[in-house]
Length: 292
Length: 236
Ligand SMILES: Nc1ncnc2c1ncn2[C@@H]1O[C@H](COP(=O)(O)OP(=O)(O)OP(=O)(O)O)[C@@H](O)[C@H]1O
Ligand SMILES: [Mg+2]
Image (cartoon, rainbow over all chains, first blue to last red; front, side):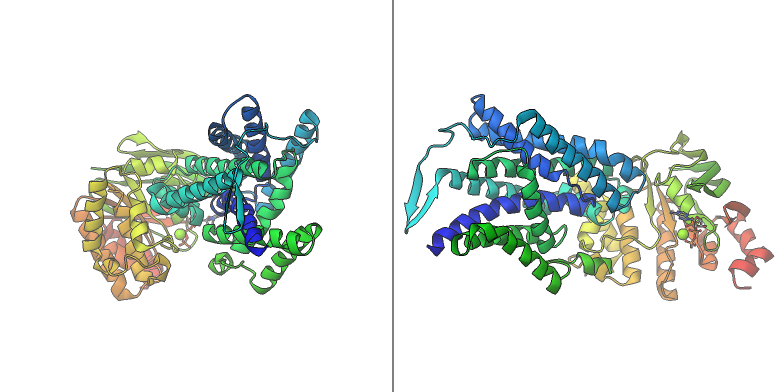
């Protein structure tokens, strides 16, 4: 049933896009490959799990978990990367530091909580579903789609429709010159960390909801997809991440449905290689052109 | 009203000291120019004044207040604004967005609109290109944009790093006429140049910087007559 598969793929893709938007923001603006990003995804899922277990309704747990993930992201960015930025270290240094940190974080979390898959409290969302034209969409799926659309809309409005977004885009292009405009770049960088961490956290909650499976390493498999999406979409390109995220979700669901679910990751990464072969700057990339 | 005084400014990149104790002053309402050859330390001086690098020693007084080591955005807030070397426009952003960024610290939307109008009537060519990405402008237009962007901050003191670099003589003339006009409007200017003849024509006072030291200073007319300056910088 192709239409149903496309719908499911779109849903999964919307969450991928949400996650990747935060990643590409961090990448494009802060110019650092921050591998701790996947951890904020895990953190968001667990925070929502605990909050809902404590009785909080989902419409409170989702924003609270997202905000807390954003704060964790700001704190970790400051702890891990301030010194490197000040010393003008290269990308490899930030890559290694954040790789070490994120592995330690996952391992610590697993040691603390165990590797088991956890489930959200039953009855968190009414089990109903809408059916129309032979398509079935659950209430959880509607919520995921609405939350993704809202957050993506908010992000686009922030980046394209506000003075703050203009300052962020300026800082992405020339951080030193942005400071000469009177922009407090360190504070703005902290804000960008917060926004991207919050997007990751929200993505974690929504994926947790979609598959109802929450475990410490869930952020890691998501990071692989995050990389595919932002590289295919063009580093730092918001529109590209949106389209590539949706595409990846649809491709994964179609592969699982028509070929084999064991192959969905293989297909996704084969596609990554293919895109980079033909278009080294990604589908919508201008980054390489701009550097040249 | 704005006065800049620099005492014993010493700067280094890592272990290499490149400024060895500069003393100079930019009195209120004047144009002071700093001329020097490639690598003399002119840009480094401006970067220190703007807070982009922390001086190793020395004092920088803006209207009597110590600003050495202060963050760049705080220095902009005090009214000293830099037009950086090589223009440094935000190439992917539109001309209008570049101008808007210059007024980042101005919270009043009416005042921002007023400054934008003033900048566009000063540089009419920018008005025709408001929606274009700044990277698509010619070198001269980019320099005008960089100056217009700095004016959007409502500066009392303007620091310019080689505004004539890479521009055709006619465009250089146009830009220097605008600088002279800004001075008449009460903006104090520190002008850095390799194009010494154009700079000395509009400046009141001049300093010659050689390998991180002030080698010579005086009124612009005196410096322009100095035989060593004529030989080294004026193609005499
Ligand atoms: N980021 C840096 N790291 C190390 N050394 C630097 C750096 N920037 C400049 N220098 C050195 O400091 C000295 C002064 O450079 P500066 O850029 O201030 O010169 P300048 O007078 O502006 O030259 P130009 O006319 O070419 O712009 C030069 O010897 C230069 O090589
Ligand atoms: Mg220079």
